[in-house]
Length: 550
Image 1: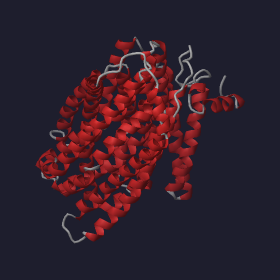
Image 2: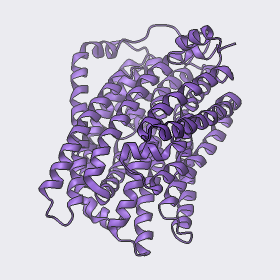
Image 3: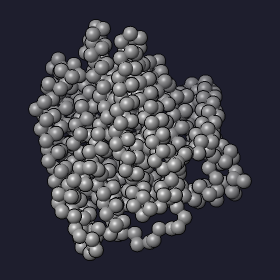
């Protein structure tokens, strides 16, 4: 919690924020893993239509959250990090207070809109009236998240990702327990109702609310526990005049609005998918229950699983923004470029093999996690696996744009991609009649377009160009070899034992080992980069001992 008093090194390093980002990434992976575990029984409890209602309600909730307060942690962390570098501690205190006020007002207003407008939104926009009940149950979560997000942003601005990490894990554990219990209870209590799936989905969204409340109370207790330290932080004198409340709120809005718009447009693709799928497929004669079942496979299986590796990119982006702001405010341009390069490379070293592994072993993974052995479900993952790479990369590059004060670019790029996405989706769902496959292809192309536009903007602004060979090409080569080994081992073990579970359990760790060895042998990561990466020194020592690093 204490402020770092060390002077910046003359040599630009990304080690500190990569470690903090890795803490947050580890928490993100744990959260996504818990999410996968509890969604397995919940998916089976709700059935196809219940999962579709849950997915639609969650998409609407996400839009409301983004428009009101989703970006508060990012905006608060960026402003507080900048004020601390400038030693404007009183201004930092005003940023925190103004953010609490904004969060309460914006979160409360959006909660009321969703509570009283749920019936109209779900019926008119999404053609899914049965999604209204789960949406109403989840709506108060937005107010809780708004206040909680300010606290998370404050700690992130101090460069401490631990409170956010722990609170996320607590939130997801409570969410998992309540979601499973409430879904099962509601499906039984209201079994005689025609729309029983709607009640079951409401049980799932109740878990979302209770998880947020639990994390909120943890963060409140943490703030109270360290209130003396916080007061000491804000009590430090600043030589410059304290900003007025008007200036403080203006700075908050100017920082928040581009991030909100960027996230809104970026996330709107999922909502557009649901709305267009419901409208266009409904016009083709597909009943609501059938549409909900297909959306359930797409949202609750494919997107849920493919988003797990993206959690790492989200975490690195969260930790990157205040770190880049500190370097930029201090005028260390080379350090900014160094942090961008190393973060992108570290992210690709994880995202590329994850995408290849999910594509190669799609069928047994879907069968093991969701108990779904249908060809359709596996094909969605095979076709959509590249989205893991593109969403990871677009997430990190969006964070870069926000960190170097090009937030408008992230908005315009997402908007351009969304317009193209809508046109492609209409073509695939309408004339081509590709059904749910069109959603998956659209998901991949949307993120790809954002990546391309972001790279162009970053290159022009920073005079920066990402190294290609060891960031993209060699990881892709190592991943391709890894995927081939994984498939051969899986098939051999499965044939020998007649249990696909054993084949999966054996092939995955072998594939990971093959990939790790190849990245060292091919020089994908070198002796200079490893010390700045999490656990890098241990990997470097082991690699030299085994003569994998030359």
